[in-house]
Length: 226
Ligand SMILES: [Zn+2]
Image 1 (cartoon, rainbow, N blue to C red):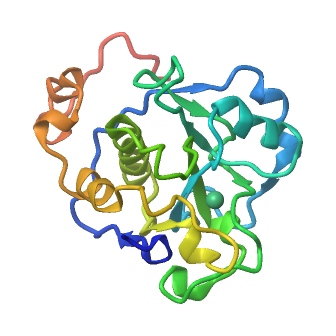
Image 2: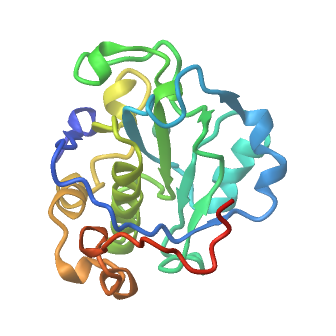
């Protein structure tokens, strides 16, 4: 049985994707609550991001996870719906702005393998919660793993200093075990680092002319210069 306290992989400097579209939608009404359950980042909101932390909710619904955030107890940037919710296979819930520090890891936690052992993880990370009971009866769906990988690739494309993908359990091993032994960590790693064509780069993106092939326009028409 895999040990979630060991779950980590690092993103190489090369191979950074540039073509990721994240199919995210605000959880209804959560915009009214994120401010009370997140903090201003103490590091640059783009250059300061070093890690993504993977969690599982230990609950059975997105609403249950959101209630914790609404009550100001914890927060996370994204929530991946469970397979018995209608949004499963459709959308990823956005729950807090990426530019804010969400509250998903205790401030005192750190690990020497992650950002040189720095603490205050929330300030240099983004948090993903996957809705799952964390029991042997409730497996993670392939779509949940794909959605998680899609978020990681979106962040890898966006944040130039993002390096670590790590479990909550590794950062807080005495108190946490999520995303749990049932989470297919090796599958996540493969979907992030070596996705196959069928893993889904949208064809509409692939069909656009690559920037390297575009020649400079010397006389832009209809532009508002001057
Ligand atoms: Zn967690």
